Amino acid sequence: MKAFLKLFLLSVAFFLGGKSAFAQLENTTRDVARKHPNGKPYVVVYVKNTTGEIVKEEVYYSNGNLEWEGFYKRSIEDGSWKYYYPNGKLKSNQYYTKGKENGVFLDYNEAGKLVKQSLFKDGKLVSEQSF
Image (cartoon, rainbow, N blue to C red; front, top):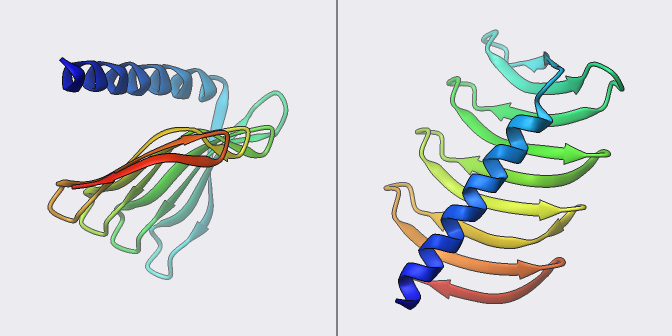
């Protein structure tokens, strides 16, 4: 039962994080700020049309795969931040609130297996479990 509850809470966190992310991208413009020497995007930012504020940033490997992506609120990390291996597999999923680590952080190996789960509250590590 305890494992089910943990999985349920993680699912709710992912759902709410995704919903929040969608709302942050409304009325934004995608801008390729930098390119790799091969012409592929390197840094991509999403700028709010009304304020000019950057609300999301994406950084790409030269092979075109996403290296990391994250959200900002008032120029501070806020929301979901995801990091990827060059092969495109998820490396880490993290959450921030007002620039501080907050919530469950999940780390994966290159094969996609969960290797570490950490819980943060207001920027402080509460617990950590390696698998």
